[in-house]
Amino acid sequence: MTAPAAAVPQAPEEAFDGRAYARELTSAPGVYRMLGTEDQVLYVGKAGNLCNRVSSYFNKTHDSYRIASMVRQIKRIEVIVCRSEGEALLLENQLIKAQRPRYNILLRDDKSYPYVHLDTHTAWPRLGFHRGSCDGEGEYFGPYPGAHAVRESLNLMQKLFLVRQCEDGFFANRTRPCLQYQIKRCSGPCVAGLISAADYAQDVKLAKLFLSGKSQAVVEALGLEMERASAALEFERAARVRDQIATLNAVRARQFVAGGEGNIDVIACVGDAQGYCVYVSFFRAGAHVGSREFFPKAPENSAPTEVLDAFLSQHYLGAVLPDELILGALPEGIALFREVFREQAKREVALTVNPRGERARWLASAHDNARNALSQMQADKATWRARLEALRVLLGLDAVPRRIECFDISHTQGEATVASCVVFDEHGPRKSDYRRFNIEGITPGDDFAAMRQVFSRRYRRQIEAGEALPDLILIDGGLGQLRQAQEVAAELNMHSPRLVGVAKGPNRTPGHEDIWPAGASAPLWPGPSSPASHLIQQIRDEAHRFALTGHRARRQKARTVSTLEEIPGIGGKRRQALLKHFGGLRGLKRAGIEELRQVKGISLELAQHIYAALNLKT
Image 1 (cartoon, helix red, strand yellow):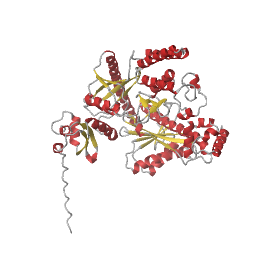
Image 2 (tube, rainbow, N blue to C red):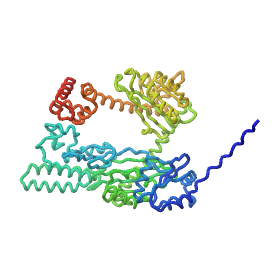
Image 3 (tube, rainbow, N blue to C red):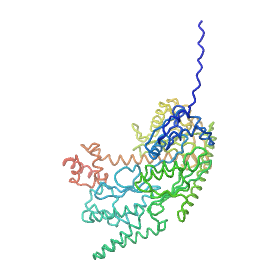
Image 4 (cartoon, helix red, strand yellow):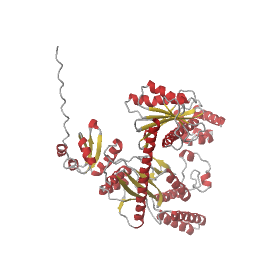
């Protein structure tokens, strides 16, 4: 009998020799990526001298436990040489946002900010709301802290400068001025003869100056125009300009910054071992338009200057920059930021540290608000943890659920059925993981079939991809929906997640829901005062909101397009061209046959069919 071969001992994995690696590096500027087991990205950094910066991690004993722990996990390092340190800063920011390394400071809120957009692709520019990339044609003013601040600014611009804000399709098909002209909120460029191109261009120029924070220059320009009109005996025009100046001065008097000019962001950073808060107050055109707090995900023992550096990089690089940033601490790379911001904005961006006078009071107020926001966030975290623990006790779980998913179905009598899946973890909602599902191929109004379909679509793909499943799944509905989910879970061999149905109580009163754990013979009833009940309500309501928003959007889209889809000869391209040309179905219904013929691809015969079909539907 042959003896079994002896097992060959595995050689221990060779430790990464960081000193030897750093000695071979170039002294040029660039970006370095520290990689751990299975090429997990641990850290992304930039350096003016790659050799010196990388070697500093291996040539001394680190006081910071965070850095020491990271260095021990390094298996290899990758570097990207750049032409300048400014280019390295931009590349570092892109890599951090894309790869989200464990040991970098990360902004959890990466939602794009809203802007006021001046669209200049036509002879009659328009002002409008914009969110997203600022690479398109025209000029962008902002960012603003929220949509409400943008809409307030647009409303103010209508009163002051009468620049149009209507969509291009609506504008191109006017034969008489709309209500905005009648109430003196627009100068009526859509109708020939109401305003000259030169006068409209002057209004656009003044609007740009005001949005750039140069309101005093606007007042001076209007004053000169009033004098010229008076000298030319155009007294009605002089009176209109006089009223415009009075309105502008009234607006300036109400502004938070007394006599202030320019666009300014005031940035305060506070933190402790429990977390950090960066608080930003936004001043646009000399007015305080709002504030916003950020809670960066920072490793333990991070310094406030590190957090501030990370915030400036991730928040402002690639964005529209204000005229001045007022900072509560001195960033480590302030000289580099000045250089990169100057190149990005094509002008000087002031970085003010330790301001005096009124600016010092704004900064002190921002620090107070940052401390309050951090305290509130920490209190919310404690409340959230308490609710999770109460839910664990209620459901008899072995551990607090680290990931919870909840499903809901929304439709109107079976029309445009949409299912939602919202995700919560130990920190609260994870909106980046939310998903919507358009439900097709079922009997309209069959909630059981809809739940079965969304549950199967959601988890079949995750199981096939080998992704981790949630610890707890909530089903908004009674036993019928829960049983559908159970059957799908059995088909997919999903054994780990706990399934729970949430049914409205007999009176449909919040806090009186029936909680049906899978396999239970009777529902649980925690009562309206239970923290577990509050948590279930919050998650269930969020799933309902997310589903309802998707359903309404799908239903509106279907009702807008369905009329055109029924007309023979109207395919996807022609339908899109018609809706774009007339600014939507409402404008299309008002169009005559000759106006319809102006659209590319629409013949006289087809225009007659469209006109007849739309007027018949009306």
